[in-house]
Image (cartoon, rainbow, N blue to C red):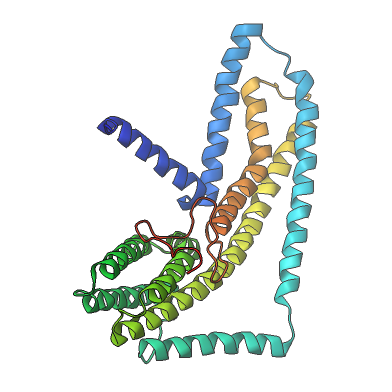
Length: 337
């Protein structure tokens, strides 16, 4: 089967990067601005040219007031909805003193237990350094397991090679993204494709299938690796919850500024409608400003929903739309065994 030409591969790679920037990597305010600019260019410039060519000067004056009025009403409704959502989050933040104390204790206990597992005196508090420490220890244990079974029987060696290659590839890709991470969103996105549920599932199955051929030292390394993967799963879930809270806080702040500007612009336009020329470009500009809050909300919701969907976790179960949860090349045990 022939590979696609280099130009075609570069084209698809560029499209994938643009899609990832639009969905995940791009600043949400910048993404909303780009979407509005593209919409304005299509409706304001291209739309005006097409309508003037096909039907002559259309009567935008007859549709301007109802459309802008509807957008103004929608802004008020959107603003009230976001205020309600914020109130819900604030209510959830208020809890009894013993519950808050228990939450803090659980974090301290999590760090203490991890320090015992890693045999270090202090686990970094910075999320990036924390995840990099975990991933370095995971790779170190994987290398130790690889060295221990170097002379093992062929089937065990083949299965472990497939597993360790997959583990190293996912860990390396995550570390590459962590190097350029600066916000909670960047950290969660970097950890997003790390499939710890599948790794735990396959490692437990490998240990069960080859329990008679595993050296005792390898058994200990596998047990410790399973512990670290479970700690990683817990940490990612916690960082995701922090990210979602911060994301909605940023959305609320940016929406306040955008809604005030949008309402002021649309209200002024309707007030002075009889005194200013309602040209197509002016109407398109007002419509773009009126739509800004909706586009801003959409940019935030798209990223939150994408992150939530791609960080599904079900403990010892593998949640996926398209995968069975098995590393390619490692055969699952036969039914009835």
